[in-house]
Length: 259
Image (cartoon, rainbow, N blue to C red; front, side):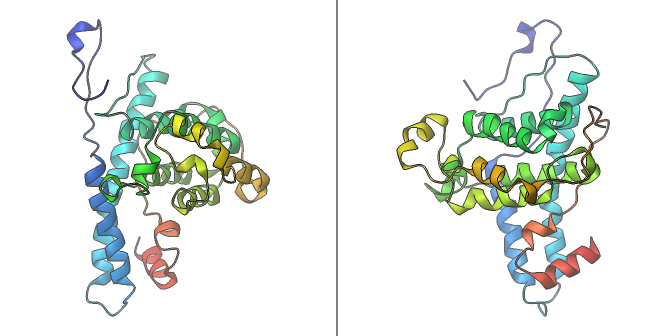
């Protein structure tokens, strides 16, 4: 499986739609450009530092926007048009779990709860077989690409539109964004569930146990569970200042002001 394109002529009442979501190499390039400009902006006297940073942030956000547009289209097809939707990318490890997870987040309120969202990540990323070992760069830098981080960035953009529809808060997303690169949690150190199961004798602290034990830190006190969620239009993206500029308070202040 993987690669190629479905021949829709073999399927009755089927259509094929592309969303031009770029691959791991384009995402990696955009990420490195962004982090380079963040480091450059640390030197606040550098000429046009914040202009370059804002441009790099805009380039990164374009990737996020494409994910959200595709997610809204999938969600409308399922919930409004009553269609069955098959989502796939060339290999299935990266863009597929991104779109499936975001769509489930919008379509089903259980995934907007704290433990529901953790279960979503477990099922659609860890068990599904996202290549964390490669994408995090633990095995090979050539396969590094911040795909899971990109997903979390898209989630924070969705949460930002209606925060009270989510039982979890931004702190959970920040925690997971840092946890995946920390090496502390075994569930983020393998390319598939088989590798995870075979390493259980060397297991580290469970990431979900940590979340559960510290649930109060990750809960939104204003949460109001609702089945209804507006997916008629993809939200405009907002740069994730609290993650990307967490170590640079001056840059965080300036970027928050200029948007």
